[in-house]
Image 1 (cartoon, rainbow, N blue to C red):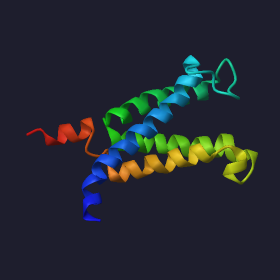
Image 2 (image 1 turned 90 degrees about the vertical axis):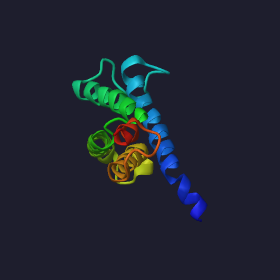
Image 3 (image 1 turned 90 degrees about the horizontal axis):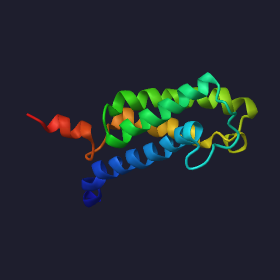
Length: 131
């Protein structure tokens, strides 16, 4: 089991990077229709979705790099909590039925990053190592 503990900071970095890339995709789909337009999103985007999309793209990019990880993850966790309660919860209680599973998962993965930090492979870790 001790051998697995050595890998924990690297696997934490992988979780951060993959979650951030998936998160960025939502913003890219809203604003640039890349890789396709996000299904069910109105065109033109309401102001609240424009703000959400830019948080997803810029915040996601910062998390991919592992830069300002804790404050960015805190902000994005809050964004996903608000998104869940504004967009999904009104459609019903059960996340599997209201389409809110991704919002809940992103919320709690980002909340975990607030406390766990960025992991070994991050710009935050590189800045901490400097004398």
